[in-house]
Length: 310
View 1 (cartoon, helix red, strand yellow):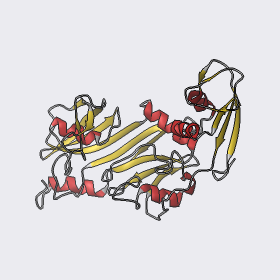
View 2 (cartoon, one colour; view 1 turned 90 degrees about the vertical axis):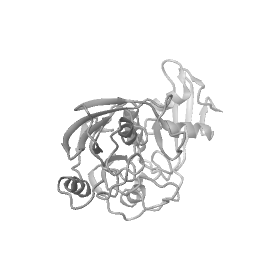
View 3 (cartoon, one colour; view 1 turned 180 degrees about the horizontal axis):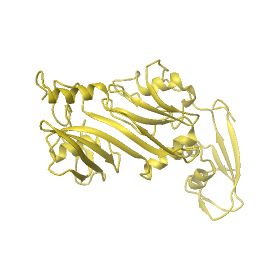
View 4 (cartoon, one colour; view 1 turned 60 degrees about the horizontal axis):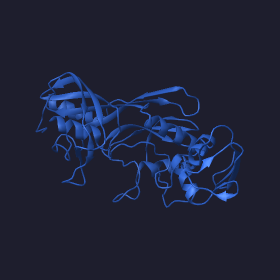
């Protein structure tokens, strides 16, 4: 197997029906993501019958496509020995139970100290997988949301799991505690989400926004609050937090879409279930995570208050 530090050249001969070059390469080079393929074409590293190619060019039977895959560019991301709980790991994927307070990848205001930095120390081969800046990442959790997240360790795994997410074949389950109790035991919030036009740092239900659906079920009620089990049909930024606030039952402790709580230093939201098909074997992978201590203690404080929990 070639190292990511070596330039690879693949010569492909087309057979079958006429198709766009980018689609042809997506089929023939499944270890590469679509964005990586477009990047290589844009850099002039793909030729069609000896000429530099464009993404929309047609590839016909007998055409010769040469694809040059350079070594992955080194990034400025720093491997850091940050403790993380590995739930499962093999040569293709790693599943992490992310603690609250840990950002998934570097960004403005947090250049390091993220899950990506921790993974680079533990799994150095993910360098460059799916992109230089967010290696291995196929989906995200908010910094202060705890729970399960799958990370790809190879380009093929990244492409496959990303495709499953796009086709809505990855099942993600969450637990949340609301302020107030929804009138029905279960339901669906079907409301489009976009950036809040008045507060650009927040998301909101906005007419013309991206379609967004959240399914919920009340697991139990306690002292004017409800513990909900939720599943996402779509995966928009802050989707559960926005949808529950839109219903009028914001997440307990959510200072952005609800109110801060003295009983909890973050929003009561935990990604407790994750199910997808293994990118290499096709086997169904299913993971569950119990509520962490801080969320259990917050619920206890509502049942046996020793101070204000609101």
